[in-house]
Image (cartoon, rainbow, N blue to C red; front, side, top):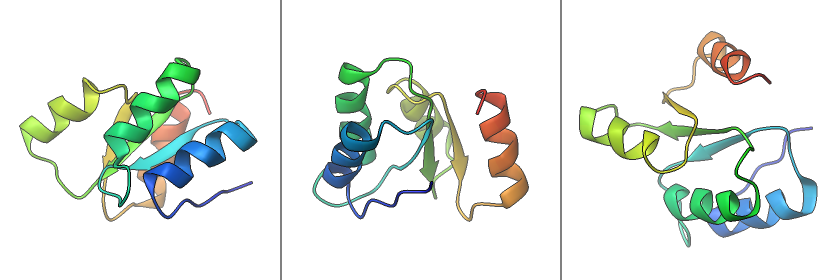
Length: 92
């Protein structure tokens, strides 16, 4: 199943309610951004694979994403092959 959250708070609630196999987490979201949602999810489950999704690919953005609890990141627009490879690389 694919679940869609409109903001980081909803992403956290969907995680708690549904315990998905992996999470694609947009970095920039209203209410609670991807960093805050990932931090909250990591307090519940340190092992859930979380892939950050961002339009930014600058070195400092990459470093911040990877040091903030994400397993990896992909950039927008999402290319199906890239997403498939990312999911495979984290064991999903």
